[in-house]
Image (cartoon, rainbow, N blue to C red; front, side, top):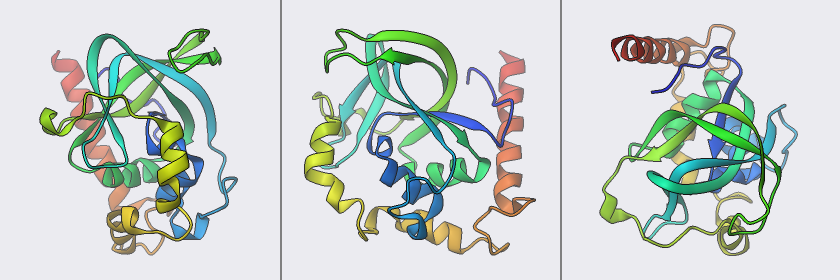
Length: 207
């Protein structure tokens, strides 16, 4: 882990798959009531690129994964303004085959073509992202195509289709504070994240 977030209520992430779609991101973070309302909160998004990682299709799935790969790069979306509760939901959504890690991405002042020709890189930013930690054999060598996802698969992820969000919805429903973890104290979510941050700090000091 490269760093820990300095402000746990203003966290930033780099998304490179289905979560680049605002409808999917908002559905995960705010539940079915937020569907169709991309202005439900004040997240800020920017095109960005993550170097030394490669994006693969996950076999028999609609979504991709990234793995560290020297010299490769992945274009995606940098999102700031996330909260502890958002990250908690995102962790559940991503599941056990992904590990959330801290990385440095570059914002794109100009977005080039699909091959990256014409990209103009700007500020370097700290972000959290989800790296594949499952079986490598589950990944296809082919690149995942966001445009193809939007054209052919998006309809199954929005518009009242809730199958992809069941685990998140159930976890939120089970929160005892009745707010899905969004109370002032945050309840179990905040406590769990505090413990996680302590572990990261200990790891950083021991390196």
